[in-house]
Image (cartoon, rainbow, N blue to C red; front, side, top):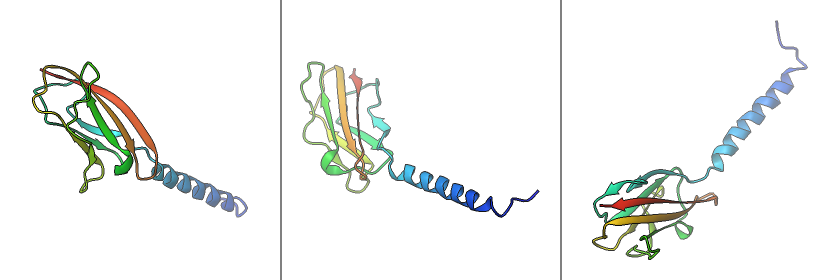
Length: 126
């Protein structure tokens, strides 16, 4: 059985539309965490920094990590930064010698295409 000549333009248009949708959906991806150190709910020795990797390159001016203790006090030693050599990585230094307890990480990530994501997780210092 052959496809009639009148049906071929429809198939071409359908294939073009599917291809355009696939390209557009990858172009508008959101930056989501792919790795976190310390990991969510991990029990660790006092870390010196928090590092996160994302699925998409980040816009440094609008992306940040803030770490706080159980009382809500910020314990980041300074501003977070997107890695200049790897724009999918962001880190923040922590104050030295964290006391045992639970700490919260709040992050905002803005992909280079402008889409914003955010989230929270915690880790425990032994």
